[in-house]
Image (tube, rainbow, N blue to C red; front, top):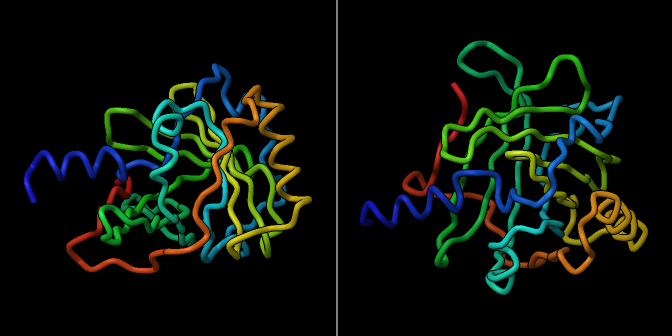
Length: 203
């Protein structure tokens, strides 16, 4: 694979997928993290069901979205800090890729994490807005003061009530409902070979 091709993959996959938006407030300013958040219960597989974002990439490429799944688990980084390890599994040109990240908890607030990314776009703040651990999770991501909402499910769909809740939270962020993008409910990757793993874990 040529160097430009590798760089393109890193730019597309090296950050939490589709993390962009158009708002100028931070989740830490307006979002209440889940005060009772328990990482052990949150751990496991989650399917990405919908993304709410005014991201220009999504506006022009939403027809090219691929099924996306994450695997979350408790971990520790090289400094011995307790973290949330997240592997994202997604296809690119029919090949399954795994992208590894490490989210560091913000000690002063439950349900809040920071991804100290190495890339050009800088760090990402993540807030667990709501989850019942068994069925759904709604997460907020903020990068450079721009917000994205993501709806995850343990299965490939959730109840209409949860979709409506996601719609309501999207509107509260000033994002029009037309910018909610559903993701494919089939074709998920669950693993990648050793040649298609990007380890973006913070050190």
